[in-house]
Length: 327
Image (cartoon, rainbow, N blue to C red; front, side):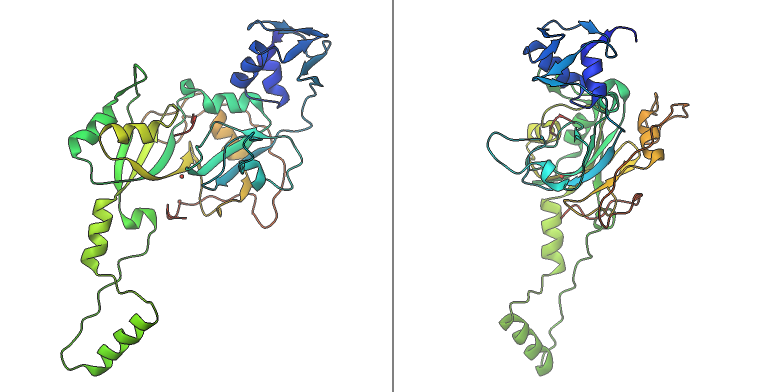
């Protein structure tokens, strides 16, 4: 086999993404035939050289696994945590292959997270150059002005670099799947039965929210759909913070053409061969969430999950239940 860059060999083995593999190399955690390698760009032959990461010999995966997890809030996107906090791996009971997260969702964000042991696949999803759109639902404090939303759409400067254009639109209760407002009961003068019903409801703790009050609450904390084609740390939260409307809830509902769908929180499913192929396409339209036609070949996904069908595809439901690189 021809010589290849070490980070590419490590990523293909399923130990880590290519970016993470580069960190391993610089930290001196990688050896080739017993010699530590710290220089990026170093090459090796996976067929003849003994390559180890943290002392463990690299072995090619028996097969590639591609999973979609509905990440809960209150857990970290990593295989292990030195602070002993819950991790996304706690939701993957029964998965025998060593998979790792593709990108990050921060501790307080929930929603769609991909996991795999295919390093090249993971590197493509994470790379901004791939142009794969990621769709989020964000609930913000207060109603932003139209001109402020336009600033976010066209790009703002974060960390001395302008963000790429983003697609942002308000979401209605119909879009998000939230139940409709409950109408306020009309109390008619002299209607003893109606008055008694309301009294019993109050005694039982039931509330009768008014349409006006609930509508005002929605206006004060509206939901927005945000579509990004890059991944900076806490990007969406920082964008809305910049215009004075901090994010209260955040949920990722789609990556490319892969939808979160009705997958319960804390559960995972296997990506279909069609979904894997779509994410491996070389070109994505800048205005749509579907890839341009491609001849990219897919690798058949493997694995299983109790009670979760192998193909779950539908429109995402309610956001109430949400770097890449921690939005």
